[in-house]
Image 1 (cartoon, rainbow, N blue to C red):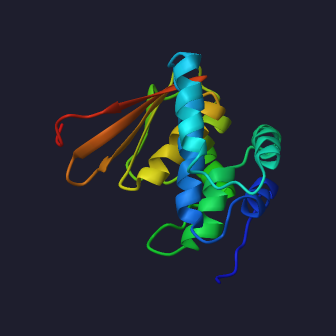
Image 2 (spheres, one colour; image 1 turned 30 degrees about the vertical axis):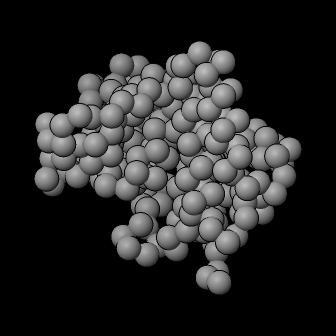
Length: 205
């Protein structure tokens, strides 16, 4: 088994809650839980979808998972960190296949270097990963009306970015697609505290 390395406490905690035999699949289900909980659908439908999904998520402890959600939210708010990206990189990809995200402190530095008197109306990242560069711009500039857009070929990355943006109070959209070929498959519209998922009928836009 590969050695794991994390920068956040919440990422370490999640590793102890999820089964280790297929951790990538379990993490994907965790992200789907987030998206259902943050969707603007009626509560009755959310409960049914969450209950159905819960049967597929092999949590070692449901109570520990709930506590983890609370701890993660607090750590993100207090430390301004990317817990989901940290877990994905440290426990699943191990920096392989190009899935090695820019460290948050570097993203913050780049955002500071790009600071201007007038906030940008839109900020785009064509290979968003877990959304760190978008988050960094938001934290440094604190704009009120900026719309953020992130695109990535990895569905897991797109979901992480959408959840991160929502939790940091950022308006915008993340898209599962290919920036180079201009293909789009699914869009996630973020308007905190909600995320709306929209399937794109045509491949190209």
